[in-house]
Each structure stands twice: as structure tokens, then as C-alpha cells.
Image (cartoon, rainbow, N blue to C red):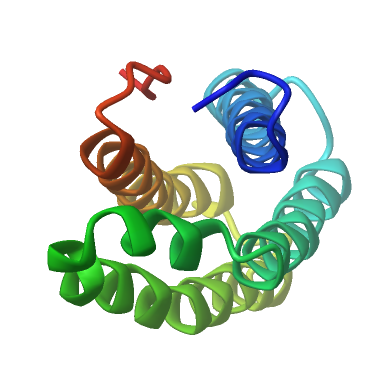
Length: 148
């Protein structure tokens, strides 16, 4: 794939989106781990994560991100469909995380419980993003980076 091609530019945009999500996840983790902000600030960042996730998945789906890849490697259609089917579930989980954190505000174990729930969600999201990267690598036989 040529670096000036629209496909390559779209993949670069998606990878940049993956890095932005990862940076936000790290920021949230630091605040929850160190209790370095207020509960309201932490809830705001969790809500921001949910919003970014919706936009990120919409961009992946709307730009033909996966469809172009499976044109090059049709054997990956099932993997692509599996990953795309995870998007609504993950958005719902992000919304549930925000609702749970907001409803528990002021409870003594808020920081521990919220961090535990967040880490579980974060780990699932990072596994999903790595799987997307692997699908592209497999489709184009590229080394485009990973979330390791």
C-alpha cells in the first residue's frame, strides 16, 4: 500500500485514534489510581471516554476501514464482522461505567470500585483495538504498530 493512497491515510487516522484512546485510558487510570482529582473530574473523563469511543467506532465503520481490508483478504470477513459486532456492546459498557460511577459518587469505596470497573473495561477495549490492528496487519501484511 502506497503512503499517499487514501487507504493508507485512513489507516493512519484510525491508528492515531487508537493512540488518542490509549492516552485517555492512561490519564483516567492515573487519576483513579492516585486519586489525583475529584470524583467529578474522574466522572467527566469517563464520560469523555464514552463519547470518544462512539466517535472512534463511527469513524472506523464509516470510512470503510475494514471493508477495504477484507477486499484484499476475503478470508478475514468473519473476523471483521466479529470486531464490528463488539462496537455497540463496548459503547454500552462505557455508558454503564459512567452511570455506575456517577450513581456511586460519595460512597466510601468509590475510588476502588470505579478503578476496578474501569480496568476491566480498559483491558477489554485494548484487546479489541489490538485485534483490529492484527486484522489490518493480516490483510495487508503490514507492520502498522500495536497497543502492546
